[in-house]
Length: 243
Length: 223
Ligand SMILES: Nc1ncnc2c1ncn2[C@@H]1O[C@H](COP(=O)(O)OP(=O)(O)OP(=O)(O)O)[C@@H](O)[C@H]1O
Ligand SMILES: [Mg+2]
Image (cartoon, rainbow over all chains, first blue to last red):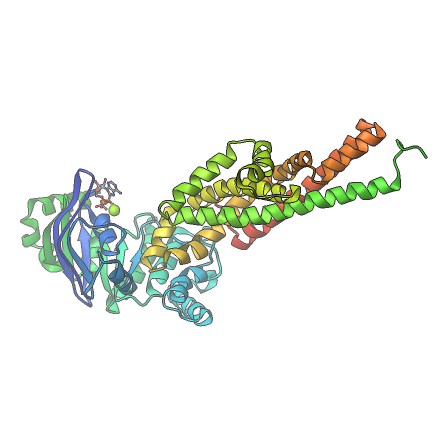
């Protein structure tokens, strides 16, 4: 379980996350929605320990991410997929995927690369397994990014707008992979602007507004009168649907 | 045969001088590479005190004339610390230090050239700082650094000629001796210059080939 309690984070004078409480249990797909600047990326970066938190507590399977000793354990349990892929440009797709298993989990290289190839095959990239990131399309790069996270066999996937740098066709190819993962029971925290997709795969929706979690509802309820009763949510949804 | 004529033995002398220059160049480059890289790693780890000391030392070495440093080591060390240094030792110490300072600067900017986003990715997947340095940063930094490094080394090869003033029998010193004996400066210095030129070309060529290999291996046209 990922558990977030009383999380506060500010950059200088700007309070970006202000008292966030959120729990994500095994098997859930929680989509995090909210307008630009509401703190979604910062929330993800706090969970994976890229940002130091000011107050509150975040644990991943009871490992506290603000304790350096426990952070490495927490990180083994969650895998992050980045908006801009963040692949290692000097490594092939296979090498990108196999790096962390070899270095962190001490899997023998041969085995790690075989598993990497298998993962890449499962997302339709067997032909491109030995290509460098610069030789791949955006959608292919993001599929490598997803494989890289899955290679660590994480209990949780953290995804921050993983399709927002992609055109619609590539977005569709990445989303279908995520839909399969969700169906397969992978636990996900999914930051997105793809409202309809979030609705189709999420078990819950968390809505961030100016650093506060103003809604945390089962998907059905969020998109029903209960969600619409919240003015900020209604406003957000109607705006997103117009675009 | 008159003393001011060239003899075949002069060629041997010149080649010996070239050998001394190259040997000094290669050894001080290797020492400089090890020390300069080590300094850059110290900075990468932000080792308290040590990192500041390294930055300060590199500044000093970069911004003062090599000749002055050479005199300081050759004449200063014996005078102040009562350590006797031979001309060769003084040359090795000074040139290694000087190369280290410039290699440090190149290494630091090469390390900083590697995108933060990849490093963040490596961090969230649990790689240690050392693993990130070795597996993510070093290969890309090397490809980035090899160009400036080749330029530096071509220059450092010429800088070795300064050590002739403290009596090391390098190519320039041999040229000096031949010049005094034959009184044919134009011929002597043309030949000496040509030898430096050829050696420099060799360094540049080796650097370019190495660069190609580093980049071909990565097949990465990001720079
Ligand atoms: N490193 C930083 N330094 C200073 N301010 C930051 C930093 N990172 C984020 N912020 C600020 O924090 C706020 C929240 O940013 P965040 O990236 O979390 O928003 P977001 O919800 O992900 O937005 P978007 O939908 O545009 O990605 C913004 O106002 C942003 O300017
Ligand atoms: Mg964001």
